[in-house]
Length: 397
Ligand SMILES: *Cc1c(COP(=O)(O)O)cnc(C)c1O
Image (tube, rainbow, N blue to C red; front, side, top):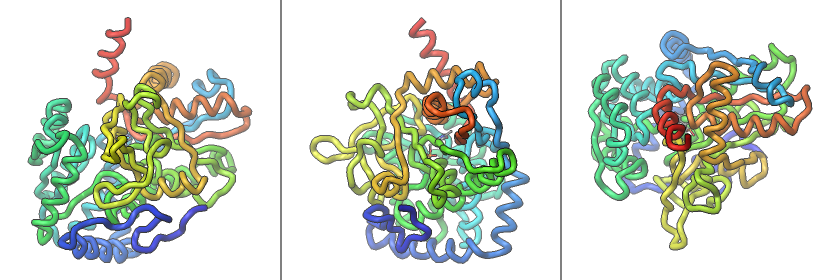
């Protein structure tokens, strides 16, 4: 039901490497360097140093007592990734890949970004290490997320606006892959989620698995037992696979992925890849993919830009189809409800992405007895979303 290791990045039918020949050599180089670094004492020591001193790990596992009692069911614990530098789990992955890039002698980092969160995290770490940084961003997104474009520029990065296709995240990934193909001698492509061709899904999982490792130790210390449920929101799947990684081989722990239900699964405006996707190839890998009637990649929607991507982690795709992982779609409206509730009950304003996981956890908690335990990955803070929520509340009142 779960995988300890993968060969050539295959997770059952999912994953793999669907790229032009010019790219596969470089992917092989990255793969070999990653395999060496994973077990290299000095690499691990350096990564741990930056995790502690720069990202601010470890993050707390916080018992949301007032919220749990208000709901009247299982105990809810929050893994506070919102307290990481730059406000989300993204920097865990960025730091790992940047150290790898430096080890490979690369001097230029490129990245894709949708809402700008991964772009900002990458620009942040590049500033700290003094590396050149170019971030690809769809033209439509540069307009919707003008403040994050400015943030990246403040941090010294170049933002390259992509005007192909839908002018959004998917087009930015394509442009970044092309750049890598042309410039791999000095350039490293830092992918922001557990997606892309091998070895990226495995690499991103590895660098995010610190979330699950910490949570496992923390819950053992606080409760002397395993949780009954572990819940995380899924966009590309990096915070989810990072959290789940420590619990995959523990069959009593149920894993739940909260996806963007958008305006409803009966509309076309959602992003429920695990729930409604079917096998397909995007950005160099195979996964559960959202397609339209013609089999083309479908346009997606979510209230939270970070969940708005038609593909998903190949490993999560595998666990969904093998039955190890359950998924639930949380609508825009439900996510908003959880956003407001966590803010009021605990004094924690969550990212709209994370609010999907919080909502799913609240629903589960209601069904479960009081001695059950749910761990929720609070992937990010909501400061970036306050404006959006303000607008939505003004519209409805
Ligand atoms: C980017 C982002 C996500 C979605 O990305 P995953 O790779 O699915 O984790 C979720 N939450 C926050 C706060 C984000 O910034």
